[in-house]
Amino acid sequence: MGINGPVVNQQFQMDAQCLLDKARSLLYVREQGGNNRGPDVERIIIFAGGKPGQAWCAYFQRYIHVKCGRQAASGYSPSWFIPGRLIKNNQVPGDVFSIWNNEKRRIAHIGIIEQILPNGKFIVTIEGNTGTTGSRDGAGVHRLTRPIKSIYNFARWWNLKIN
Image (tube, rainbow, N blue to C red; front, side, top):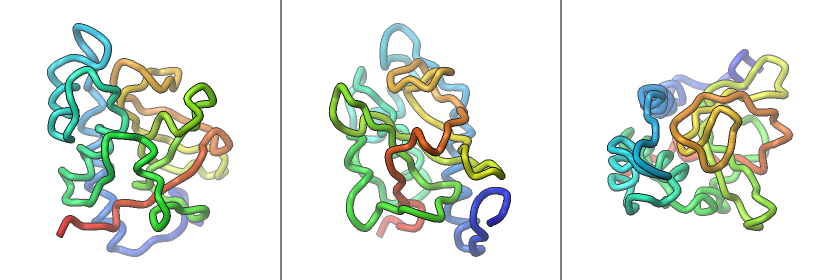
């Protein structure tokens, strides 16, 4: 395993790197004027097919995937974790992760893996609609470090180009 996860081929470098670059370019985005509001947040939501004011972590993922010419699920978090997309092992930067919410009894937050730390017990993520504490309804796009054990599941979409 390499420092950022398993050794992967050059195609991965090209396919997933766009997603990571696009996510990093949005780290400045913050909500303004209300929950799930603001010019940058609404631009992301609308481009990805949603309506201003909707929760937007999945719209953030859809936005970066479509901007990079990749297939993407909808703005509904659980839609990203379907058979054929789920991965159990060998997660790499560019994969999508989910957080389970007991109150909602479903996946209620998602983000993208930026890095797998060398000990393999933590991932560095970039997430929309979160805060510095990792909440599922935050105020912007943030880089966080999460323990792997807090992740519900993983999915891979970076390898699917839009036809």
